[in-house]
Image (tube, rainbow, N blue to C red; front, top):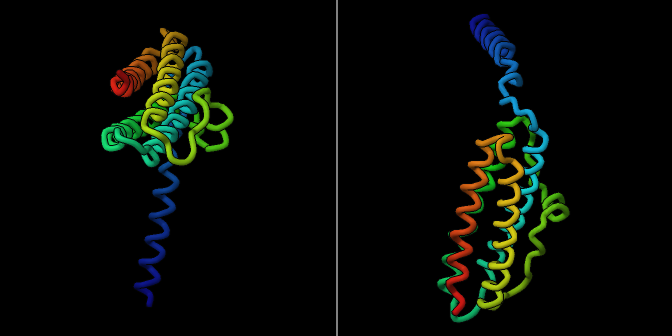
Length: 179
């Protein structure tokens, strides 16, 4: 019994020592930016747009109907997968800069400039028209943020450029459905 009590006390002691020494005070390791609040504001605005667009693309992926179903279903699955990765990278950039990312559904709904999600079954040609329009808006918004962030934070600017290139690639693929 004494041995068990000794081991328990040892484990408790080591655990509290480990927890005490785990507070590394890392807040001073956040990259310093002169205009950090402006950069974080642009990141958050594009996060709202990307999340809203992700849901629109996913909704269309599930509910598309028509002769182009198979092609669109596959393309849209790839597209929202890509958007999910972009959302994660952009949110993590905001965390690197010392601010929490906001992806709450109510905040996305209130703050996104992408527009609303279609509901119910969607005809293939309506899916293409709607997503071309919203993807173009997203690309334009990303371009505006790229210009605003500019030299304030070239790392964020580079990330936004990469995300815009990905959105533009899917925009081109969607546009190729029209003839």
